[in-house]
Image (cartoon, rainbow, N blue to C red):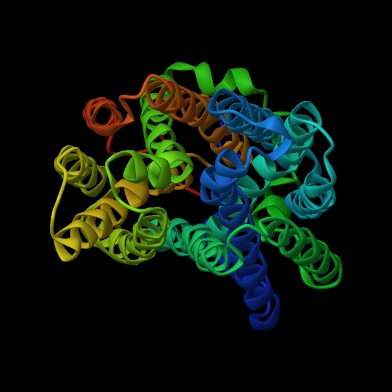
Length: 413
């Protein structure tokens, strides 16, 4: 495939003014923060929903709702990539934020488990589009030598949102509806700001000057130059997202089943995501200096060890906090480093499609993770078998990263 990416000189010459660049960084980061808030909120409130039997909800119902939410996210992620490469990043991102915000506001008004699940499904469509578009815009805002940090910096927003959810969940207890109202209102405010302040990606604008760049099909990712990387990225993303979503959805319940009280269990979700923020900052810096592939391998390897440790009941709260924190440090940033690899490996003309496919296909893992873990919880063996399952998944993620080529087949835009 002939590269349609702009030369480094032209990219530098057309770099956005400093003020516009700041708006891109801030608004993409906040968008991912809102997604992190939303995707963790269900895990934070599941113990309350089951304890109060809200709408007659059972553990099986909670698993179905979590699964349908992620089905919507997967569909949104797969569909947005080609659209963003054809129509632009800006409008796709704003529309996605509006969609998930409106349907999130409606969730507390659901009159049945079915309606609750359908609202989460539709919200997921918008939610799934937000992350790949935000990551693409941030990567295209940075020079190629800093793309790992661009991805990990953006994803600190996800775990910051998760931390905010955990803190609020500890405060509102049974008044869980507040969590959804806060998110929906905040999303609509951010969408309005994006409309007036978010610029289009300069790399997309430059690539768009070639008509061929607007018609790159998904099938180009299956050509020999990209096939090996594509398969490895898809499998690694599947495993990484399985871990991220499985842990964020069910960790409080797994901890509760292990004998820890509910406040302690929810606190572990907070500690996990604080570790995620630290890991992302650390992982991006190490990957840009030492190489993305090698760093990702190391991160998955340590994840295996930490997840295995969580299967053991710990009498020391300090030791438990340390293990959960380190789990967040390595598990969550391992997944994001896979995205960083994509933004570095693929040229601008197909970058949105490649990242959308990695996110979308990987989201199948985000569906499998909560589903399998939910089944283990329902069977009464969530602890320790949930953590055995997660450790095995991390091993498979490590193996997938091993297959990735170290260098792109053509210059990176």
